[in-house]
Length: 519
Image (cartoon, rainbow, N blue to C red; front, side, top):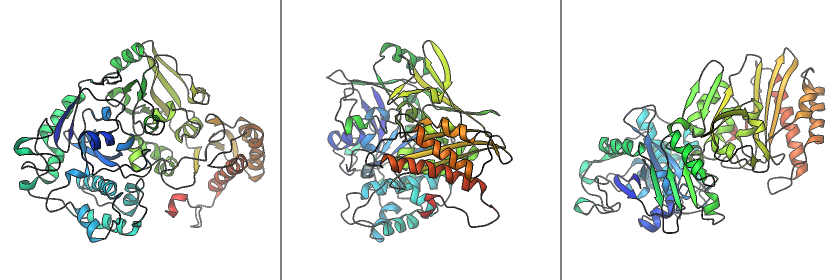
């Protein structure tokens, strides 16, 4: 059984297909049709809901994040509070709803529920930390929401107005009362509220939070009549045991890629093991040598930790998927997926990152670059799982440059991603690691280009020699994202860009812009 809350009401699920997405569960089992399906792949944001989890930085509080419900499975709700647009029925209306009406932020309205929930999450976060989001934060919150007919100007204006307002509806017309059934006391349902906690208070109901914390300390399980199964272990030992007992089970963290096998390829996955409840996979440990990031840590949680060490991670992570994807996607999942166009592996390979692989037989560590053997083929042995990634801290003479090329600024997959770690002694390249995504069947270092740089002066001629070496060691594929010739050209140009950026005169204001500066 799994336990969670839906719009303030306790839910207990046992006999449910583990392949069911949150979106399908809402629409087909609960008949809450405010949440829409647009793409079923996490690209359009029409299905956006908000999920509350215990806040690691504020004890006794829930942190609310926007997620794509079309690629989040119902088993992942164990110990969480799911909030949908159907809950926003209080009077006066939530500031986001009011301003979307006042600013004419909707036409056909199909995408509007998802937009409202993305802005609701931003408003809730801002109210919790006492800040007012600027336009950059507003645009990031909406980066995963597509609107075909309204245009974004009135939506953005609605967000600007809403996020400076408070939300304090009276308790007499609150959202929901506590109930373990669909229908609560006095006939309360998600579409027919009854008296109870009102305003922000129902999002931080102490009794609900205590119950969620209790649920998170208890392993969850789902099964159905077909024998499909979902396990949600809450300890490292339990995870090891499940991996030993069920070596063919699929591990799922954020599920932002794995869930596409269900929604796009229409597969039924026999057995899933959810990693979200294993505390040891959620750690971020720092020391003087480096930072250790657990496999279950989300992109959003590690964003500032990486950016403050290696600033180029900031612009890259801002373009990794959307806000909804970054709220769920994990570095361990991105590595374990072994996609040649994953954004994190090239950057981590360039830094010389190392992986911890765990099992009942113990833990072993290996360089990340040795983890990938071929397309979707890794060094992961039976019963093993990725426990975490160790990333070294920068030295004063080291720089990291990361550049992503894709057709869209936000929410898009790389055509080419180049990551270049350089260690310089004055104007000489003492050491380097150059890694690319999108250029081979795996994330791969450019050993020939590295050899052309080591021990050489960091100048245009040396860079040209390294670019020429790229053409001898890569044979990229041609697909919808770019031709082989295009990829080779781009890969060389990215290395040249690193040279120009590293040698520019920082005393002037005429500096190259990152692509995100144009958004």
